[in-house]
Length: 369
Image (cartoon, rainbow, N blue to C red; front, side, top):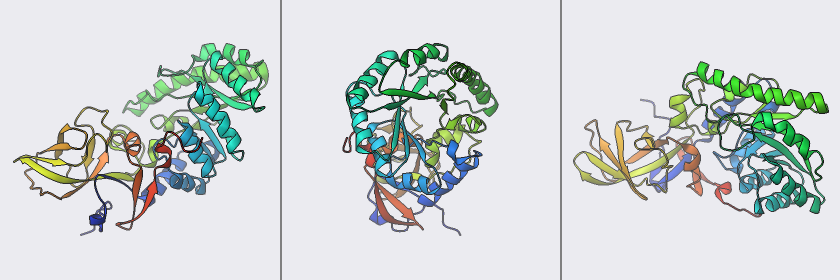
């Protein structure tokens, strides 16, 4: 009988709870991502999921040179790994503006840019950059329906024009994140995505016609990646693809990525005849979704999460199987991105063996800058 891909032969050397990564499966996910686009230069993957120098270098070895991130630490991690082009997909306000300029100065080999969606921020970034005799490349952040950040596309032309007189900044692109579009029906998701993107294209065309500038468009995340991938005028920014998780595996059936990161947990108690408790609490796996949507166990799919606290997860046994204290469970997180951020160290699994340890460097709020 063939051994399941996730089994770790020296599991006794891996304390729990733990996050483990299977690099060969991550490499396959990179190959799958690349297969969606006609030009690797249109890829600008987000690093929020992996936060790792090792995966960053893996991506660069695959020909990817452009990246997105959400924090100054993630941006610095990318620069430390030698990434040529980094978009901080976040609007740096107050101290972050100063940190961002410091980052630009510290890593001159990396081209940094960031988001902006209002004139007040543009003026602040302009003042900080002018003081340091530098220029900050900016993307106007557009609200295409998520209503989290961004300016409405129909109001953005005015913002673009108001920024033309500001020194120290240069608007080089438009950013349109439509992460709210998560319909399992790809046809419906595509329809909604196209409706939102029309306004982006209208704005892009208006700026090009009036100012003879062809701004770069960075669009989408993981759910709309297959849709934006078919365009010829936009860079694409998927993130979760690298490790994948149960939430997207259930919803985005058209994206055939592999689970490449799991949580390892052990049975630590048997409080009743039909329940067990494992050492996988809020501090080890993303808890923001309501139970039972926290984790699915590959080697025990019928276990049902019924309660969770900081260090414990209670599971109901629904198949009559017997579990013993010390038994190991291999779990697929429902949401991998915040789960990774809970683990400062990741065990690397090669050929069924825990061989190495990676540091989740960019889970830190600050590295050097």
